[in-house]
Image (cartoon, rainbow, N blue to C red; front, side, top):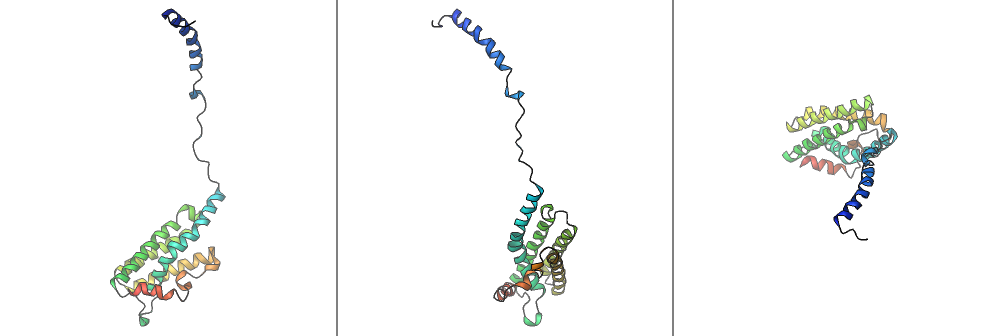
Length: 188
């Protein structure tokens, strides 16, 4: 029988309406909401992530910047290694800024992992880099040398504790073939 008349349609609705009301009470709102937060990272995984990032941070940011700053700070005026041109001094300022920013990165909780000595060395690198940037912008060779000594001491202390195989900072570890390039950056 076709439900074509109003009466028949009304009767069909009367049969379907209670079923719809019964199912209306079964809404997804009654179910617990799914947990959409990412699972917490285990402390060991955080340590692993920092351990994986640290070599890249050192190789790509800290070491190149330290090489320029320390080469300028430890330049021998008798050998004419010190920065001479405006561009060379600016290269030292730029490297000092990069080194200071890297020092901030080293002090992040994910890198420092509540190690007080690590934080002290990262702070000393940052402070030395800021001082070397100011000295280079003022072309103050004595202040630059002092800041360089502070940076080197912080690098050596940290490397002796956490990277014994790399106890000497990068500027002193440059292979002979790399030293002329570092000096060329300084002489403009």
